[in-house]
Amino acid sequence: MFASRFDSLPPSPFARLDTLLAGIEPGADPIVMSVGQPGHPMPAFVGDILAANLQGFTRYPPALGTEALRAAIAAWIARRYGTGDLVDPARHILPVCGTREALFTIALVAVAEPKGNMRPAALMPNPFYQTYATAAVAAGAEPVYLPATAATGHLPDLDAVPVDVLRRTGILYICSPANPQGSVASLAYWVRAVELAREHGFTLVADECYSELYDGLAPPGVVEAAARLGGGLANIVFVNSLSKRSNLAGLRSGFCAGDEAFISSYLKFRNIAAPQLAFPIQAVSVEAWSDEAHVETSRALYRAKYRLASDLLAGRFGVTDVRAGMFLWLDMSAHGGGEEAARRLWTEAGVRVVPGAYITGPAPDGGNAGAPYIRVALVHDLATTETALARLIDLFKT
Image (cartoon, rainbow, N blue to C red):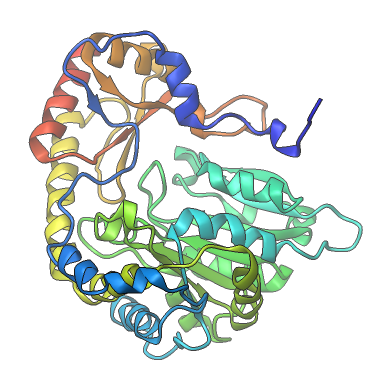
C-alpha cells in the first residue's frame, strides 16, 4: 500500500468542513463566509491590459519576471514602508504565482541543509495557514506550532521558544495581520524576530498578504525592521500578492523579496521546478502595484465592515475591536464550541464558516486551542455582511 509522509497531515479545513456539512441543506439563503476570497470589485483596468497583451500568452515567461514588474514591486515597497532603495529590484525580488505557491516552495530552499544531526524545525503560529505545515513536511522539517492565543496577543511569544528548538530551526513563518485573528505585529516584534533569525541562522518568512486590509495606521512590515537594524535583508523573506490587495485572487500574482543569497538560490530552484507568471499577468500586475486608488476604495469597504462587526458583536464571542485582516475569530465556547456552532450556523441560518479546530494544530497540553472558535471571512459587501452577522447573533443570542 502506498504511504506518504503527508499522511500525517490533517485534511484541508475545507474538505473537513464539506464532511461536517455533507447532506445538510442550508437553513436560509446561503452566505459563504468560510473562504478568504475577496468579493470586492476588481480594478477597472484589468480587462483592457489583458486584452492589449494577449499575444504574451504565446511565450514562456522568465522566472525572474520582467524588469517592469520588479521595478513596480520595488517602488511599491519603498512607498509603503518608507525604506528607500533598500530593496533592489535586480537582486532582492522574484515574482511568484500567488503567496501560497511561494510559502510552500520557500521552505524547500530554506530548509535544504540540515543543522548537524538534528532534524530541522519549521516554526509557525498556531492557529496557522495549512500551507506552512505542508511545506515543513515536504522539506523534511518538523512542524513546531507556537501558541498564538489571547494570552500572547494572538501572535507567537518568540522569547518563549526554547533555545534548543531555535538552534535547529530552518524557517519561521509569521503572518501579520494574522490569519485568522487579525492581530498586527508591531515594529518591535518584527525587530525581535529578525534578531532571532540572524542569531540562530534561520530564514524568517513574513506572510504579509493582508497588509493592505486595515483601519487606522498601516501595519508595519518586516522590511522596516531590517531597515532599522541594518545588515540589509539578511535572513528575511517577505511575500505579498494582489489577491487581497487588489481583489484578484484568480490572477495568482505575487512576489517574494528579501535576502539576496536566498533569492539567488530560490531563482535557481524556480528556473527548474516552479510555475512562472505569464506576460499578460505581469502586465496587469505592474499597474496593480502602481495604483493605490483601487486599494483605497476596497480598504474603505473593509473599514466599514470592521466597524459594523465591532458595533454588532462588541461584548459577544470575545470581540472587542476589529482593526485589520479579513476574518473574525469568534469564541463559541458558550455554544458548544466551533464545530457545533459551524454546523448550527449552516443548518439553521445558512451561514458557512470554518471551525477553528480545522486551522489549529496541537497545543502544548495536547489539546486544540482553536476548538472553541469559528473563523468568519469578511469577504462580502456591507449589506450581505450585516445579514450574516445578524443571523449569527440571532441564532446564538441566548
